[in-house]
Length: 316
Image 1 (tube, rainbow, N blue to C red):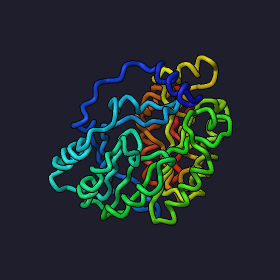
Image 2: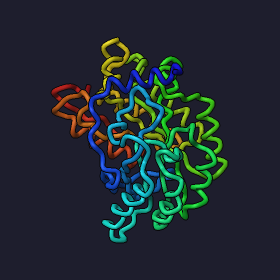
Image 3: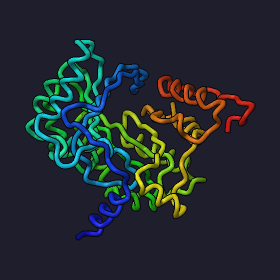
Image 4: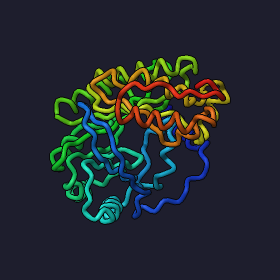
C-alpha cells in the first residue's frame, strides 16, 4: 500500500459516521447574485448534487459527508438536476453551478454517459460552473466546453501556497500543475474560479491572513475570474487531531474581514469571502451579524467599506 493510501485510510478512520445520502435527490439549490469581473452582477443557481466521493482525501475536507459510498449511479445526476430545474418553471438565472462535492471530470463521480444529457439540461444558461481538482482538468474539460451552449467555468481549490502547509494537506496538488491547468483553461477560453483557505492547517495562526493574501495573489496572477476565501472548518476528525497537536487554530471573523479587506478591489479577479456558516466563526456576538452583512456587501460591490464599530469588542 502506498504512503498516500495509508494516509487516506488514517484520515477516513477519524471521521464521524456519514449521513445516508439519496443519489436520486439533490441536496438542494440556491439562487444568489454574484459579482463577475468588469463589474457585472449576475444571478447564479447553485445546485448541490449527490454523487461519489472525491478520491483525494484532503485533510481539511468536510464535503465527504455529502457524498455516497461507491461510484455515482448512471442517470442519478440527470434525475437530480432535472428535479431542481423543473421547480424553476423556466425562471432561468444567467449561470448554473453544478457542485457535486467531488470532481466533475472524474468518471467515477460523473458517469461519461450522463454528460451529454447534463449539458442539454444546462442549455438555458449563459454560463456553467463545475468543480474539479486540477489533476482531473484535461481532455474531459475541453469536451464539456464543446458540449455546453454557455461559457464554461472550472472551480478548483488552490488552498494555500504556504510551502510547508501545502505539502501536508494530502491534496496531491503540485503548484506547477495548478499553474499548468490555469494556463490550459485560459488558452481554451474557459474561466477559472479558485478556492483559497483561511486558517489552513500547518500555517501559523499569526501568519494566516498573510498567506491567504499571498495565495489570492497567486490565483489572480494566473487569470482567475473569481477567488473565494473559505474559512477552514473542523468536524472531520482529522482537523481536531491537527488542532490537538498545535497545527490548527480555527480562523476568526476578524481574520476573514482582514483577508477580504486586503484583497477586494485589488485585482482583475473578483475576490469574495465565503459566508457559509460565517455566523459560527469566533467573534463578538454583539456585532457579528453586522460584520457578516458588511462582508456580503463587499462581496457584491468589491469596494472598501469602514469596519463595524462595536462598543462591546472594539471591532476585534
